[in-house]
Image (cartoon, rainbow, N blue to C red):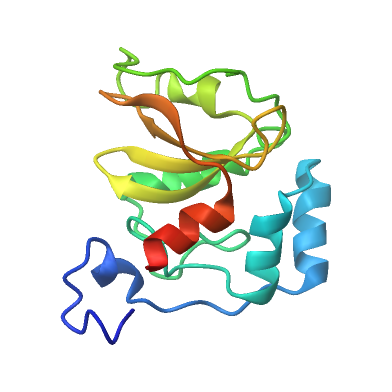
Length: 170
C-alpha cells in the first residue's frame, strides 16, 4: 500500500504511514483478556498475534491493543476513547444494541456514547468523532460497527474484523 501511495494521499496515511507495530506475544494478549474479563474475537486476536498491533489500518490507523501509541497527544480525542475502553469492566459489559441505531443519536459526542459502546473495543478513529468499534459480546460479537454520535448513529459496517481490514487494504 505504501508503494501505491508514496505521497500518503490516502486518508489517514500520514498518521499510520502504512507501518505495522510488532505482533503481540500470546502471553500479553492472554493477560489483556484476563484483566478485562473478555475473550477477543478470533479474527482480531489472530491479527494482533500474527500480523501486528496497529497502526496501519482504516481511518487514522488501527489502535494498539495493549500500549498507547508512542506519539499519542493529550489533546487528541482518540486517546481518551482508548483509555476509556480500558477502564475496569468496560469491555466485559454487555453490548446493549441488538439492532442498528441509524440517524442522529442526538447527544453531543461523549454523553451517550459511553452507554452505547460498553462491550466494544475501539479499532480506529475516522475523523470528526467517528469511530469503528469491534463488538466483543452478544449476538453481534465479532462485527465491526461505526459510531457517529452527531449524524450517523451506531451501525454495522462489516460482518467481521477480517473483512473490515482487508476492504481497507485493497
